[in-house]
Image (tube, rainbow over all chains, first blue to last red):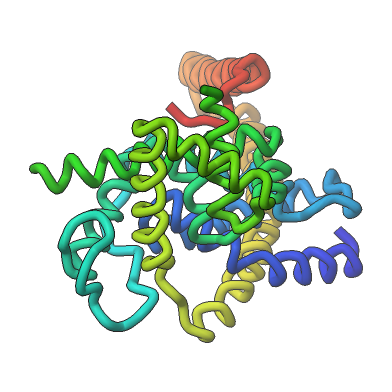
Length: 170
Length: 148
């Protein structure tokens, strides 16, 4: 790879590294795995950088490497369980919208429920709810129509809600 | 009742991208179908819960080190390739020299020479066979990106 390409690669990595790490964190629920997999995906992207069409979105191209690595890691089932969410506000929630739980209980319930979802459901929730991507961006990233994104999101949230309810019952 | 339409309207509502006509349509669904109304309330609640949470923030130092770590890994990858190529060439040459000297040595009995030659040839065939098997499996495996 020539110096120009290296500089371009560096600039592209720096532009998307936060999104890459946080998406991996949402999918894996573990800092170490998110760090390792998002960086490994960048190494793979670097190896195949000559195949990247620079008129296209780099994150969309990179995401295929990342998702494959995450799927591999999930199949390995060696993930360590650790806390990966925090409250937006520092105050604990006095009244939880679902049931009366304080912020930390809610956080653990949500983490537990998220990790019990399928990777497809967790992926769509992470991209939309935590990464704040719009429907069009998600549709481009996953190569599906916007309508599919909307219905997948709707059902993923429904499953998440059901998971949380069953945790409350237990 | 068109459920797909209802899901779409809900998402538009949540994304704050709903037109006046669509809002009226959504309200119609919610008014006429109690099941959909319950689902809508449930969706709204879970949206609120999700909006109260975010992925754990990382410090500035973390992001400073992130690219450096990738750069180091790329650099080390090149170093390992160079070391491996150098090692293969040197070890190959050393092995060739050792075998040549061994075969030229008149003091070693013929049957020992034959035994060692057979052993080396066996190891080489085994190595080639394993490498070929791996290469064929890699080419044919359409799920090679996924570890099992």
